[in-house]
Image 1 (cartoon, helix red, strand yellow):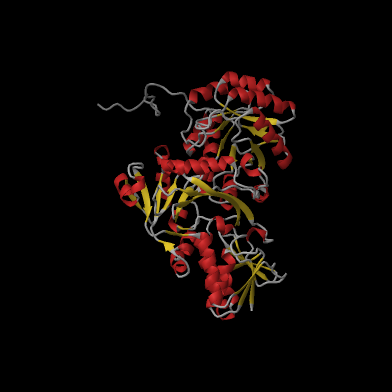
Image 2: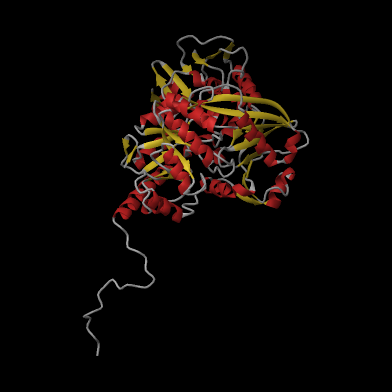
Length: 322
Length: 255
């Protein structure tokens, strides 16, 4: 029996990958409901490795390239790509973004309008990352738990994990040196008048903002990146920047309802890359930072290779010691 | 160069925002050899702590110069400075009082007032200012022992928009450390600032947003070194006509 602390994204994905390899798995979740205590609940749910290449290490692209296929077996994945645009005064940001990324083509204004009619005539240049996708994080967490249970994974909710587990996936609560919180804030808007079908990134010199359609007129907009451990509600400054960005994408968002705002603490290591770390007898998967849905599949496979004896031999180099 | 109570040998201060990761920031600090880093307090303390991030900064061994980035009033800047003094146990404060949200231009009137309050409270103030001589004089009267004129708006990468104003500041404030803060985009801008006789530069975006931040940090360090050495070596004056660099007298005449 392999035991896991934490039924968030990392814990559930690892449980599924272990179960797929035939292991008996038990997951402990302190919260009374799946997903409630997980920072993934506030994620964008973007499967956008090539866009992330703008600021992330190459490893994020390699590890994340197959994430959309992995998720598609578990939960609905919308494969409509990412459209990157900038207000006229931040056009230099678009040029920089293009220089730093791969896997896109440039779009003129009329092509943007053809892809997303709601944006016709509003932007004269865009970058289109056709292979990217997105999913609905809260639904995906539930579907992931269901898929794991189907394979026999036992998920015990409302129960703190025992002191010793085989795998710790407790995110920012894990006692790991070098792990730090990076605060993120988001909002969910309801605006049935506007139809946008793919993730839109609006470049901005200070914050990379994105708008992810959730269907039924719902849109998630995020996310700030603040080096801070506070989990208080979204600040006025952040919220006004997020809402301002939505308005810049389409003035029709002025009439949107702000259904929800949220904030969470992303766990990150100094290089902002996830790691498998062994500390004492416990293996940790942590540091998914802003790449949870993108990198959880590849990291979970790594966990499984490490914890299941038959396949462990060649994969020791994938794990560090804390 | 001596600034307040510290001897600084590398004339480059580095801002710590907007890097792809703290690991790259740490490498950039090491690659440049810079001894002073600025940290924005405002967004990083509200209700929690940025301890994880600060610990990584402290691990570099660089001296921390907290700043009041994003403050728009005297009161905000003073409060932020007081928080910074407690958190970082330093009297150094880079004082920014922003006058306009779009171009982040300093509000020099509020700046002088805040500098006066903070100096009286024991702070060692590094004021982010325009390149105006009279503002400089008022800041010195307020107790500042260093001046930080802008080269161009923050993050714009435009280089030194008015080199003559900086030259005038150098001449007017011969004995005051001058640090060009904001506007540096390329190593050539850093060289130019140092050739004008500035004592140091402070930069952030030019390094953090470069394709290779660590490579750019190194390039900037070489640039300030070159510019400072060039200034010390007394460059020749420009002339309107050519001056042969080899002697023409005594050359063989062809028949």
